[in-house]
Length: 512
Image 1 (tube, rainbow, N blue to C red):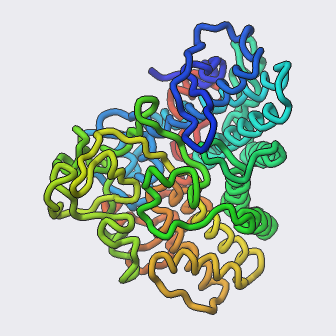
Image 2 (cartoon, helix red, strand yellow):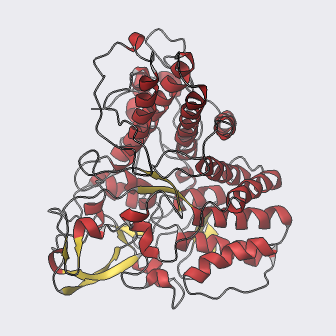
Image 3 (cartoon, rainbow, N blue to C red):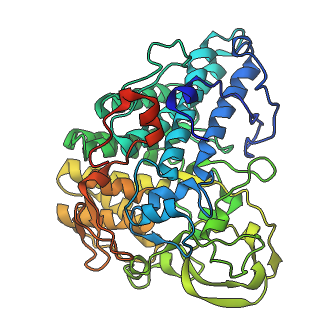
């Protein structure tokens, strides 16, 4: 069922709450369902504040929601990069994304819009109501509000990059609200709110890290660096000033010494290494409360290598992208880096050649099984949103652009990424050589994480797997299927259902 924006943002999304626990365990735990409460009677105790912010975190898991047969929402951001394909043909919405033939009726487009505005709605409820709760420890109240501001900024950062001008809703909505049928705010206005929300979150008393999976000061600063980097490029073109802001904010994260690269790529999908080390902010999953639903999508199509009963194969790497990695790059090493071509029969049996290429970067061997150890058939593996590798590459790119050439720290940041991949790094670069070297590492290191598409848009450049250089966005053809990018693809279309329910959203983005 589709919901228009006005209904979504008027919902009191307390619903199924996930209550907080202490220590460094995931804070997910099944809690009470207060959805039968009157919102006027809620937000009266500190426990209500805790439940409300937990409900906001729960909304982030829309990213793993289903999108018709054999598909999940998260696939949208990589399907349009040319780096992935599918072994199945049943999902027409996914096929249209892969072929760049989507429109406002696409289920993925609808689900991302709905999911993000649901998260906006819940954070608005927290921001509006938690300040009035008395008695409540003021430091705890401030932290909960900081988390809400972070999550609202996180939502709007996705919204503005996907759709450009979007409705800017900052208050809980009812049918009597004056902006119940909102117009679209300019991208500049949306970015101004994002920056202000993140600056507010910075001052909320959050710790630099949070082992339970909540937003931390490190996450706030990392996201703000990413926002500044994006603002420096297309379409705002803030240029040098915002490259400098991005470099400065990323350097704050680096100099905090609170985060570090894992020595092994396997730790990126090791459940025991979640919410620490390289992982700055992740969407939380926990078997029995909220199982990770993404695993089956990336398994080979029904080749019986997992304890999971369903093996879909609707998100597989394009071989041309894999082949473009440098020789000896550990990220291409079999079941060491980001790919695999063989696995164990039924998850824990004899090793079998799969005669094709698959994504290992998010592979949960606990759920699937591994040599000599049967799988569980379910997954608690978190889904990454911000990690330290991206912070290093953000700093390297931004410092080079702001300074006119890379300094020693920028080269060291790039070198750290390449050292882990067992690659050598030149000691000297021109500005343009370094620029393209960092762009390439972003493609290779951050692939299949929903990052590459946004790099394509902010740079208006696309990695060419043959030349290993960068083509203009418009006119670039994908190596796997020949789909060609057009100017209109810089933004997604607004969902048709939203346009029909709210005339104030018209016209749609150019070309749709």
